[in-house]
Image 1 (cartoon, rainbow over the protein chains, first blue to last red):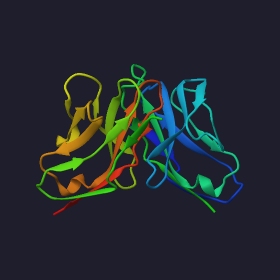
Image 2: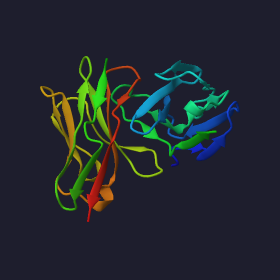
Image 3: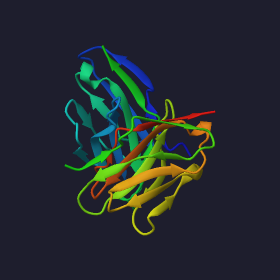
Image 4: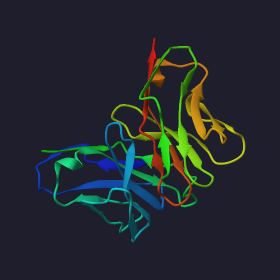
Amino acid sequence: NAGVTQTPKFRILKIGQSMTLQCTQDMNHNYMYWYRQDPGMGLKLIYYSVGAGITDKGEVPNGYNVSRSTTEDFPLRLELAAPSQTSVYFCASSSHTGGSNTEAFFGQGTRLTVV
Amino acid sequence: AQSVAQPEDQVNVAEGNPLTVKCTYSVSGNPYLFWYVQYPNRGLQFLLKYITGDNLVKGSYGFEAEFNKSQTSFHLKKPSALVSDSALYFCASNTGGFKTIFGAGTRLFVKA
């Protein structure tokens, strides 16, 4: 059981480039999330999804886009990379019976540097 | 505004001593409270949660947390620390919906 898998683990982008961070989960969870983690700032929610075809903005969505065509996959797209997007990105999922009181399962993270 | 505070950036304890990692929350309504642990170069792992009922919650790896409504706190505790407990700990809260609020994290260092 792989849980939540993110790729790539590391990436260096030049300003203005674009990329997609991949996330897939094999637990049949309806809810999926993208967070960014900055030093001393905790985690900030970028986007979330409550099921295939349904996505919504979190606290810090600017500069990002998401899609959810299947239950398993929730890719995060950066269209025009900026230095402010240098961060560690985490994908997470939680079960359909949950919501507020259900813990999340996290991927190992993607460390992104924009230069 | 709703928030979760972890007042200590770092906690240092000696192996075998009890440890406490502090968390206070400011949310409207009844909070659901969580503790997660993050080891180097890994994602967050769930430790325990408080939903309702007993104020003392037991979780993974011998950790427990005490919910105190009057003090709006949810401190993480362990009776006897291990070197392997050294990691980054996050407190989190959710009062409904899908927007979990995380604290800034507390780095626990356990010295042998």
